[in-house]
Amino acid sequence: MFSLDPRKTAAEHIVAGPSSDSNLSEAARQIIAKPADATLSASVVVGLAQAIEALLIGTLGWAIYESYVRGQDDSFYVPVIFAAVLVANILFNVVRTHRIAAYRTVVQQSGRVLAAWTLVILLIGTAVFFFRAQDQVSRVWLVSWYIGGGGALLLYRMSLRALVLRWTAQGRLKRRAVIVGGGKDAEPLIDAIQHGAENDIVLMGLFDDRDDERSPLLVAGFQKLGRVSDLVEFARLTRVDLVIVSMPLSAEKRVLQMMKQLWVLPVDIRLSAHMNQLRFTHKAYSYIGDVPVFDMADRPISDWNLVFKWLFDKVVALVALVLLSPIMLATAIAIKLESKGPVIFRQKRHGFNNELIEVYKFRSMYTDKTDAGASKLVTKNDPRVTRVGRFIRKTSIDELPQLINVLQGRLSIVGPRPHALQAKADNKLYYEAVDGYFARHKVKPGITGWAQINGWRGETDTVDKIMQRVNHDLYYIENWSILFDIYILIMTPVSLLSRNEGAY
Image (cartoon, rainbow, N blue to C red; front, side, top):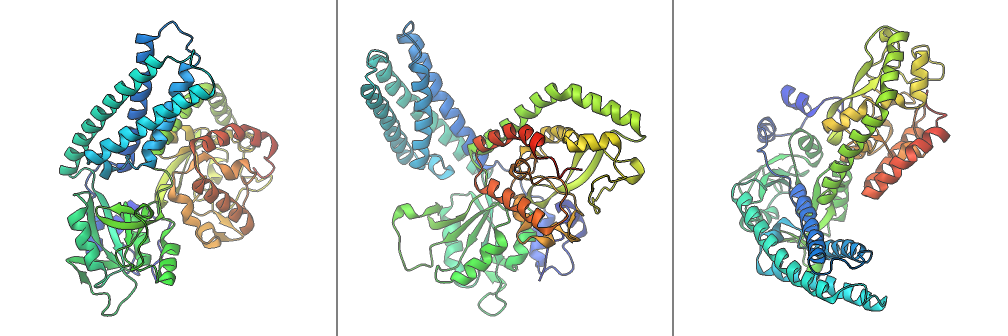
């Protein structure tokens, strides 16, 4: 059974080719060797569409206030506009209008958007009546905003539709997908996807654990690329956006085995319902084209959350660099005065989707004693660490150059800490000590994280310590929100002052 060597980057695998014990077919190797076409991320498109729509609604509400009722106390209007924008976005998502497939429609999209916008205005009117604020909120303003907002939303949505249709025709919104499961059962699924997915799905092939006549090498013109376990390697060597599982609900054991292997990947996983005799209500499904599917797993951060996360990282990194530049300059001078060698220490670590990234730190060890792979953990009174190094490691000042990594896009401000390649716990490499370790790489690693503010930083001399780190990282991934990031960021200096006994 193939297992991906986590110490190689995707680029290194491509150059050297998949490992000799890989079960990937020649067809899979050819796909890996060919660069993926540049496409627009559907998540980013949806996220930006939501952000622009929210800005449009809010700006229009304020513009109408300035035109019709300027001079009245605006203390009621600002929170009302903010609340309306928030509720509108929630309702637009509830009625599933923020989907690439929905953007392509006319009647369905327009009807749902207008219905949701009408409900928003009715809720505002009800709230105004309930709180007896009729004198503070102009009915002329509210009606004008409703009519103007409805027209603006329709115009915006039709413009968005034209843009999405253009990108679709150009192939710029295509998602690269693979099917898990083969044989005759996969044939109708492939046919339905090809005829109903509106040019936004690129099927690359199939992965199946069966080796007998039930799983031929060619199904409906698509080749078998390997076993399910090989899909983990494949998805780390070339871009995979979507995994469609062609198995019946009755095959519970096979589905669970598949999920156990694939849950570490940052991809959307859908279970096709085309093989199930049992029918659910329409709302129970999501759809790939006309194919009903069950959502098994989603990318942890997608749509406008991806945009918010990006903005949060860049803004915080820039502000932090400006505010902390005196400390960083003083640290650089102190390091240079105490020992010979570069101020910045560069180290390879695991990043998003297990790719290899280079992170920056202030050098805390003597140059001739540095350990780029971190094969030996730093311990208390470690002779390799300089006097300045002990202080900056204790206070995490040594991590400040990673703010540059955030601006480069390699790290986030908040996320699972990136671990060194040869880091060990009880003489075991981290990925050998903890089952499902690589699931922490489903999001971009961060400078600080949930594990760190809960005291799980510093030395990991036991398996329990690294397990605690991983468990906290997985909790963060499963419960991520921008507010969670803000909380972790605020609590980081508090944690450094109160929980730094393990950092040497």
